[in-house]
Amino acid sequence: MTYESRDVINARDLHRGRPSRVPAALGLAGVAFLSTVAIGTTSAQTAPLPPSRVESTNWIVELSPKGTYQTGLPSHAILKVVPKNTHTINKDFPWVINLLNPPSDKVLYTKKSLTRADGVFEDTSATFKVGFVPGAVGKQTLLGSVNLQVCKTVDQKPVCSTNWVNVSLTVDIVPRVPRVNDENKPTP
Image (cartoon, rainbow, N blue to C red; front, side):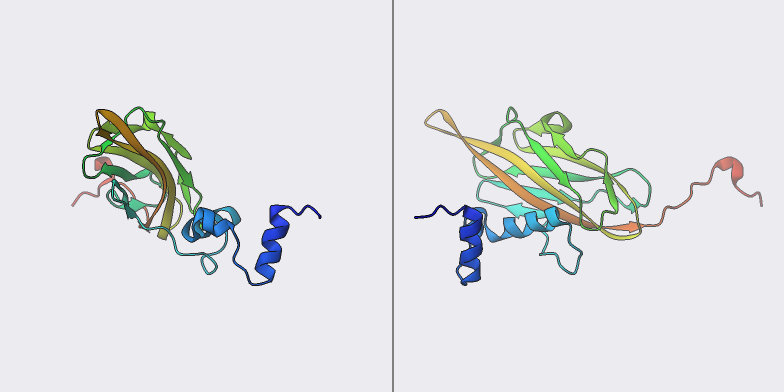
């Protein structure tokens, strides 16, 4: 009997038309998202992006725009986690939001990773500002992966649910509008 690594077994199974065991463990959406980000494929080759709003029975995660976005100006979007039913936000959990390079690479994040210290926490929500600087006119995509935890009390003990959630937001970037100082205004 010979020893075969998991990679060899998975490759052989795929070659024979059998499904790989990896997608079953991660989920097809997770594999597509991770392969898109890791490989840096072009938009013609990418899998569908995760939605800007993801909802479960215990929480809602949403990445939403804040105002208008102009090239070269510091901007931000809002990432918000809202618990549902009797759940509350675990303020003590080591929250992490990893911001991933979008395939277009035309967005520069002010921080690649956000932590609990970057958020505003209440029992009913956790809110983070996702800072970035748009680099080009047109539609640009923000990608993020959120590690969250919500809890509820069962028999006077906290029962918590921890999840990694992928979200994206496509925003319209407009050309930068030059500012005009009062001194430079033409006089009538």
